[in-house]
Length: 459
Image (cartoon, rainbow, N blue to C red; front, side, top):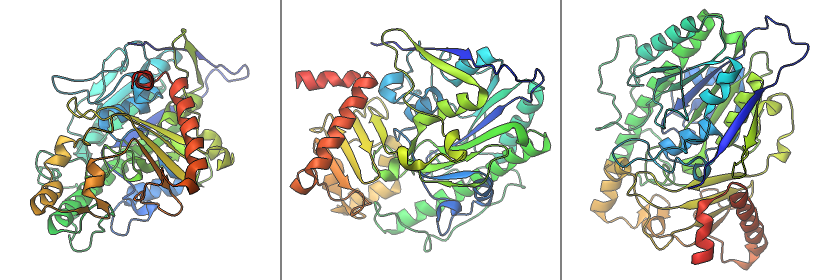
């Protein structure tokens, strides 16, 4: 097993004042949320707090997770490395779990030498601790906005004048054991925002059936609770006088918890919201193709910490800081993002690699003879069980057969086919695009030391 190391040095400006205000970071991570926000054009979502955050910061319209699975995506967010490079191949919980390579350094370890106090409130879902050595770990359900805000308030107050990095890991709108936890006991000040199943939009990858609409209505209610939590956390920063020295980043780990989105590398699984608010910036939006591998470089850039790769087998951080986009850099040069998936849970092996440009997406299914596996929460959903019970041939606009049984290569013309329904990998008209993306992906896999490259030699 390869090992990876990152060392850091603190970039100190010679003319920087000794008593300069600390540059803090609050990273807000939603659980299983796609583009279902008012500020992203969703017609029914009730997300006033996130909409206000978008109006005061930068809303990225082409932001992508590099994997659509909770633990793996969170590891990429916190290490800046794709899953096959950081080692968090799948879920960090349960008896048969995965963990990041111990020599990798996550953000708490990268920021500590620069004097940062790090904390996580609610969901972390990665391991081991030596890779993610948060100074403060506060466990709560991640669904009670009042409790989340209280824990954030204490962390900020306890940090005093010390610069801090705080991860707030919301659990909404992830599925609960039953439904979306909307029947939980919450403080009376938490608003209950119910939705009519008849009016919710049904995504293209889901069948328009009563049980699907019912689950989507529950999902949107859980999302409204998440939005309330975000609003309360931002209010804590305002009341503590820290909004003017804190970089705020909001994103999701992966797409909605429904078949055809979560665990896939289709856009429904990885095209996600990203809102960044830098103090003093001019609000706006960016169409740059950005990735969750860009989060660590962005945080380090804001904090003035420079990572340096060390060791012969070390993987340099492949991402770059998005702060330059906030400062007016053209989005044109940000022309491709990559994806890497191995497992969801340990029994769900299906390695995939992906490269996406503005015009095309290329997916390489490294174990394509296998049937595509379901995450347990998706398999048990009323949505998928309804598909099975009826024996549906179609799951929304996609054939169930095509969803479960995939070819080695998938290529989609995103201009003509934004929902990725027609595989044109065998179409001579797209041969040049296929060849170019094959080469791009091969180069990226080599640069990130992909251990699955061995399959190219033995199969």
